[in-house]
Length: 413
Image 1 (cartoon, rainbow, N blue to C red):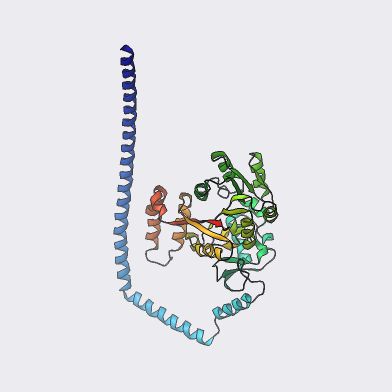
Image 2 (cartoon, rainbow, N blue to C red):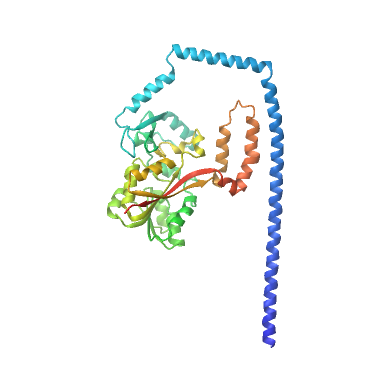
């Protein structure tokens, strides 16, 4: 009897301990709830203040527009517009010269689509290489003169069939020396990426996995350690290879096309994250990747989405040569099954990442016209209201299209 009583007393003590622990958790949750309510209250107050300032600004705009000065200014602008139209009718404009120049450039025999090998393409713009060199020196302290091979101009084309955007000439693709300089920035080789988390879900059941452009091998290490999968990678960057070898991560230096010949049909899945946009031969890259797969194997690709918010950034140096050679979108990937033995399994679009919030705000601010009467007010709102909300709320960030486009293909039998 005494043993039963002792056991019951022990159970009562254990239950009391659990109850105390639960009460402590409830107190913590209540504290967090109060903190969240306070933050929400502050955000509401800021929104009300902004609404009041917005009404005041609108009133000022109405007052300005009703003034005599504003009416005179509108008449002057209308006169300038009429004068400009008259000049354009009598003097050949720069735009007409530009259109003629584009037509001549588009007729070049080497200007063909990198996916279809046809000349069904459109020239979108040209970029002076001197400007690229200056911008890279100013913003990144990297001299890309040698990377551009003496070319005076780089051209951006679009394939009309696939909507792939690509830069010519192709020999301006970055060398390994460029990437060794870029990896000195802590943001360049990020150990944790959104696409890695998503890919791990899609790789369930796969036994042999290859990552092309594995960098320092962080994803390979994660697959082998957390999931026990036989994963390996190939990489050309010597510095990244050394980093992987020092940690006994199986990342080796192989030419993709030679490796595809040696290991044809060996892998259950082939992955490539933030690599395809650097490749000057995307058609050959995709063909070699497919060759490495078993029938029914998965080809997983992640690239920057050029239809996302960075497209509004005028100085997005990393999305043009010598860093990126191609620009991809959802429509481009949808076109690939008509060119390769592939079937689309699923698409995913990255939500706005927390580490991209400041960049996102900077880009939105750059879109505000300096001459807009609400420019100052809108800028303050972006920094004082929108930015704090985006940093705190994963839900709000999930409503905004982020940087990366992710797609899973199946190799047809």
